[in-house]
Amino acid sequence: MTAIMGYRELSEHDKKVINGVKAVAEQVGFMCDSLEKLPGVDLRWLAIAKTDLQKGFMAAVRSVAKPETF
Image 1 (cartoon, helix red, strand yellow):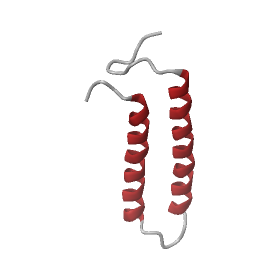
Image 2: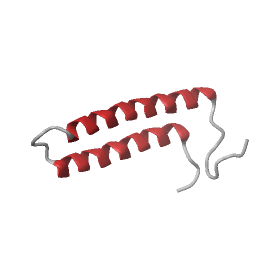
Image 3: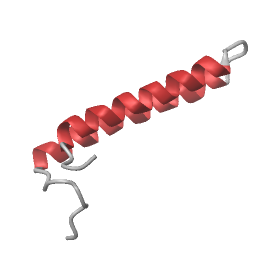
Image 4: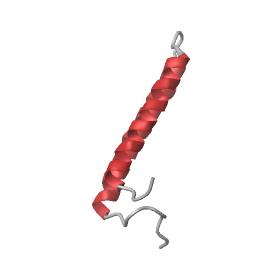
């Protein structure tokens, strides 16, 4: 298996935790998609929410993966 540059080898536990975070992120993404279809929703604020949530989930994954590079 080829390693991903800048990442350490992940344990099975780490992989399970990251997959759990990604599963929750997917559910939150579905919620955002459903909000987008509601009348009167401010799409600008929803876009901000989606961006911030994506950044939060990315940070959570990085907290487990602990990449060694920028």
